Length: 290
Image (cartoon, rainbow, N blue to C red; front, side, top):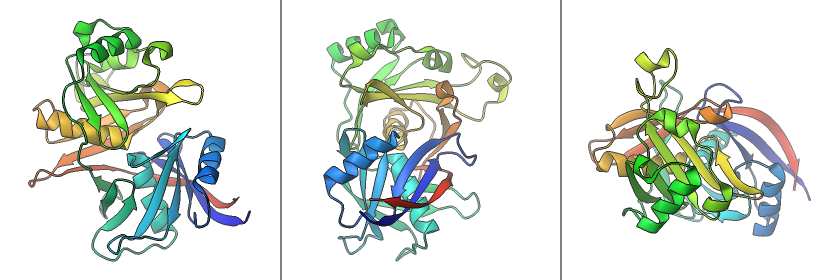
């Protein structure tokens, strides 16, 4: 074991402790995948990342992303949080944008100096067709809702194997009480429009967000819920904007049901590329023995 630089970053929020925390080991050199997995499981966070020297000549750094029980080829909040930590530790990009190397290949990240947000270019979907009918029925049972309440559905797989479910309003999304036994083994993302219908209180008239999002996935102890999920929001945006179910620019809220206030900024550019952005803030900085 040796001391390695470490940060714990809160992602998709400008206010500490209201987003999705990420453990970042700034020097992962020499660690085995088993050691990375063991440390990730110990943190009890949704993900941990390990920064490494790049192997691709265009990349600024390489990252390995782990969640409890498995390694991920890509994930959104670890991408933004790792980039935030890398820049904060003195990282300097080779070009105008930052290029991250990970399991899905190269991911471009840009900085907005005016807002302070980072954003990544959404990787292409691996699957994008509607879900099988039997799986939709199972998801409806697992979410405790009638099948008819599901307005639309699709594979939203950009590395993590998300299944996207669109409900009719944010109130339905926030009221969900998923059944872990029925949903066992599934990664399910649920989204519902925010606005006058289903939003309680003063936010109903002038909400800053277009959608409420929740993400459920298998954890170490049954079904878990992710506070804020960049990969899911990226895939949902590609699906919904492409299908004409969402505007080309919007903000999604996630984490409300967990007492968080995550904000995910979505924008489709003129060339059709979708960017997913948010703030990050460092909450812990120091060293870890690994």
